[in-house]
Image (cartoon, rainbow, N blue to C red; front, side, top):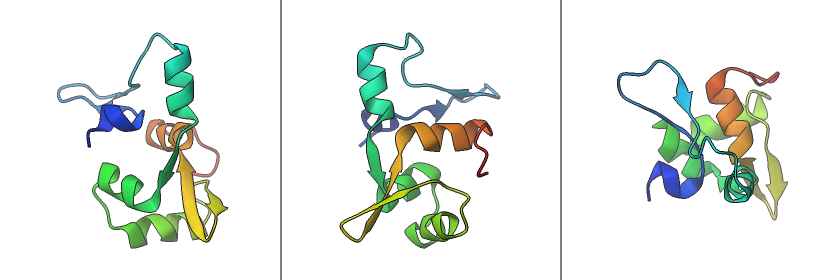
Length: 89
């Protein structure tokens, strides 16, 4: 699984800013931005433990929704967190 498959941006080596997966803003990108990621997927993308992701959610640092006893994070919210634009961060 690669970062591009999940529809979230990645840090590009040699660049200081986070890069969105598709800068053209197509419908496909909007669908990807609305995708809900599991805590395990978020942890893998950020190279932290799932427990850390759940702690961020509990502290309100990472906006998430609970579906069937599992936390899910919108890809768009994760992107905003990485860009530093989120109010919760």
